[in-house]
Structures are given as structure tokens and as C-alpha cells.
Image (cartoon, rainbow, N blue to C red; front, side, top):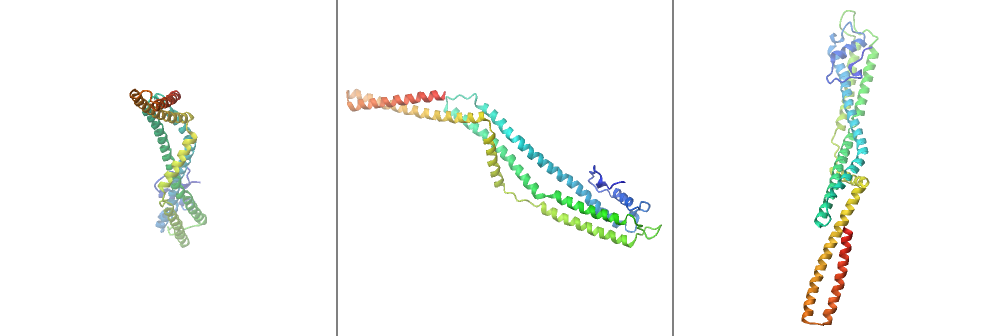
Length: 316
């Protein structure tokens, strides 16, 4: 038994093939000897095939397209689930190498090192925020469409009506005489009824289609905010431990260098005060207040120098 074009598994035609469908209809209604396309209702037969076979072929193509989008979404989702943790681990592992040639004797260099690490960390979060945001938009867009079920429903209804029409008339003589091309009035009415019912199915589908493709009204701010939160959580959970240690070391070195700088400034100030006290003792030898003041300054200087040595040891 032959098939309508839309019944072929490998069907991929974009244009409706009226002659092929007419040939198959004649075969199934046993009218191959007298082509329905040459009958007195040829225009109605054309409308019948266009309404049913033409629409069904369109649905077959659109169902294939919607399945492609669904497969793309599923593949993208699985790829993100599998790859995101490994990509975060991979990138943060090699970001750690950025700081290996930096020396810690300069507070400026330590600050630049920390800025570099924070920059690349923020860059990774921004990239994955964009990926997650796009996935959310794609998810929202796909969930709003629901076109696959709409097309399947319409296609099934059209096939059911069309095959019922075939079954009703495939065992009957459709012509009024043995030689003419005038069909039975009952068959003419059945064709008109089938066309009306087919158009009603197509119109109902078309209404559902336009409702489904309306703009989903996505909140960009909410999408980016949620994506950023999720990307930050992923970064925290899957970043390289070496990167975490490098960032912690950078913060520690930066803090120590800032404290060293503060101790050196304090030591310089104490030395200035000591110089002033020594000058006063030259003018007033043996002054008990100045002598006590000098001893206090010496103790403070010794404490600052000891703290400075300890900080430098830790920093190295």
C-alpha cells in the first residue's frame, strides 16, 4: 500500500505536493480510473487535500522543529550540569598561577595581586551568570510555547477526520454513472462537511498557537539577580582550593604589609621624639622628667621594633 507524503518517515518537504496527495487519494478511494481531480468537484477535492494533507504536512515540519528546540534545550541543560563545576575548577586552578611571580615586599604589588585575583574571580562569576541567565530565558521561552502538544493535537485530529472520511467512501462508487465525471451528491456534501470540519480544527490550532507565542514578559533584573546568586554559590563550592589559599595568602600579606607600614611610621615618629628629648637633655642635663621620658620612648621603640621584626618574619 502506498502512502501520503506526510506518512513517510523520511518526509522533509517544505512545499505542499498536491499531485502526489491527489494520486494517493484516488488510489485509496478506488477512483484511479477516473481522477477526482478531473471531476465536477475538482476544486473541492483540491480544498480537501489542502485543508487536511497540506496542514498535516505543515504540522509534521513544525513538530520536527519543536523537537529540535527541545533536544537543544535538554542537551544544553545536561552540558551545563556536567561542565560548570569542572570549568570553575579548571579556571580557578590556573588563575592561582597568576601570583607565582609576584614578590611580597611591596604593598602596591600585594594590592595588585589581590585585585588581579578578585578581577578574575568576578570575571568567572560574570561569565557563568550570563550562561545561567540565558538558560533561564531559554527555559521560560520554551515552557511558555508548549507548541509541540498543540501541533500534535491538531495533526491527530486532522488525521482522524481524514481517515474516517476515507473509510466511509473507499468501498462505494462515487460517480453517478459509469462513464461520466459527476460525483454523487452525498459524496459532494461529505467533502464539503470534511472541509468545514478540517478548517475548524486548523483555526482552533491557530488561535492556540498565537496565544502560545506571546511575549512571556521576562523580568531581566530578577533573572540576572538569581543567576548571579547561583553563579556565586557555584564559584564558592567548586573553586580550586589552591585558588582559595592564594586569595587568603594575598589578603594576609596585604594586611601584614599594611601593619608593617604603620609600625614603620610609628617607629619613625618615636625616633623623632627621641631626637627632640636628646636635644632637650643636652640643654638640661640630668633632668629627671626628660630622662624618664627618654626611657619610656626607648621601651616603646623596642616594642615597635620587636613587633616589626615579627611581622616581617611572618610576611616572608
